[in-house]
Amino acid sequence: MTLLIDPPNVPGHGRMWSHLASDTSYEELHEFARVLGIPERGFDRDHYDVPSEWYDQVVALGAQPVTSRELVRRLIAAGLRRRKPR
Image 1 (cartoon, one colour):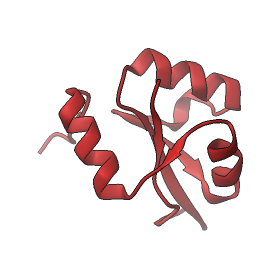
Image 2: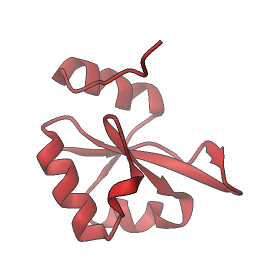
Image 3: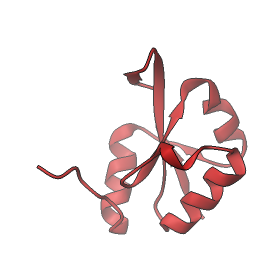
Image 4: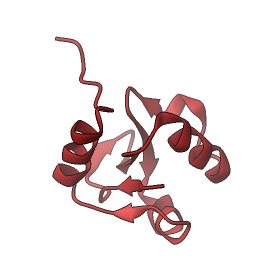
């Protein structure tokens, strides 16, 4: 089980956001999000958007802090990256 979270560096809606992803499966990711209480509407293609104030709790519960580039690299390597349509 490997859940990944990048630093809160994406602004939106008056807050900063992190991305929570799994390099194992979407099922693992959805289950972890349910445990955290992250609403399903926070899921965006291959990750959940997580507000900065939740970052420490997500890490404390087992998500591995990684850079944004590392998160994307690991999603691609696992075949779980879903890009935005062009």
